[in-house]
Length: 314
Image (cartoon, rainbow, N blue to C red; front, top):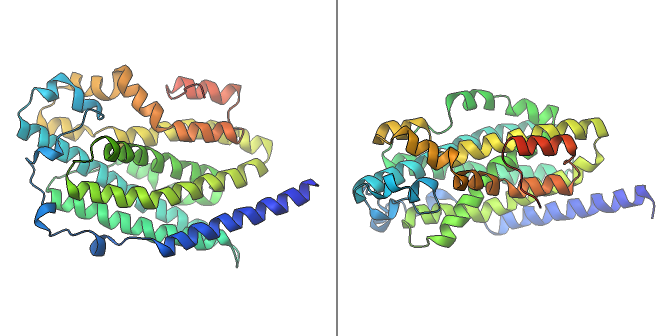
């Protein structure tokens, strides 16, 4: 079999996979204001509901300072934490859709990517509505992404055109940590607040398709890139993965100020303890393994992964 024939067969397999993902989006999807009973009394948001208390899987949730606080305070901190994650999710979906629109605009007629990209944008739009509604009902004044990150995010649209591979790595760098966190919460704490659990269950189900598309895109396009471009990409992925994991998995400074959380508690919980570093490294493990799979880990990029503290041996 010639290389050309192999390429043709791989193109066919890629398009068939995207067609299956598109069909799945048609067959099974959710709408936030149809499928979530927001006004059901069981879904009401009481800031002191103990079901908002952070689980031990959250680095702050197992810290002695947090455990020593009254139940109502722990619940309010937990609600603030979840509302901020939702706000970050809404902002990420907003930036993501801008890039997807710019990328889709340049696709040719008959492109399987075009159709799936639009299915994903529709679903991400629903996720943004769902996350923002939760923030609104939480009654918390969360801001989500730090302002410098929001400013930097304005460049996302350009990257989807200039370097689509790096853009889709950035997409996965945002999708995989929050998916990892939500799956863990649903698995280890199924008795959490029903509103949050419903939101996470919907997001996890649809995000599985988006992550599948992002991974297939990388596997399809990156091996075809020229060697210099692949090398530059290998250096761009580790910092992208680290930044996205940090902004998604760590709380903003405003949370410490709102609840008088000592600085050393926040630093230990989310930055300096071995457990907190492991949380970040584990959250990017799928992205790291994908880089190994497509040949983007070389002696230089591997040192960069290690320098950022997010390398673990396969």
